Length: 282
Image (cartoon, rainbow, N blue to C red):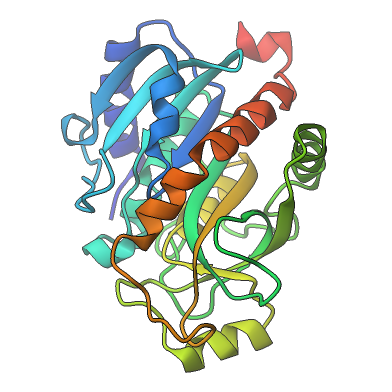
């Protein structure tokens, strides 16, 4: 179990690297989407392995770096790749950087992922605005002793993906001429892909996309008061929806094919997020 002092130790290390820079928005870049960090101005890069108590990415497509700087006029703390429960980490460890971001000053979080399409109306390459999420019996980062410095024991989850921020994302997509899907993200831990029966169950329960990340981070974000905006890049059709099984490399190839559109949408949303009051920025 991690304690509050562990988070403070990690935050102190990062403050020593970024000086007086104070991030406003945590940007989590998922599988095949880490390239957006390359657009950050005056970047300060800190590998995860150099941060006390921070788990290290083992997935080959995740660079495993924090990148601090400016993007779309906002002060950003970006995660160039994330960690997952399927790598052997606990939900608490997976959520560690979210709480760390809160200590450093972040008030908002934009989370992205690569996901499989469960809704038959969706297509490979679509971008889905996440309206809600479903987890059933998977690990939860809030299980165990509560750390009151981050939030209350009981956490309201009725507006997980901020309605105000979803409105601005829809407007951004409309202004850019981007077809934006909107739906529910269904969480499985992985690393194996889901069976056709599991996909049918997810669809019957209201899922539109399915993936192996995001939910532990979002739970921790809501608990500690961050407002969340989330996007899924639909990189493949889920099991049983098409005759051809998943082909290795499909996720990365799809992400590469739509990266310009995806980057432009996320950047536009960043520029539209409300700025914190001047008293919070001082």
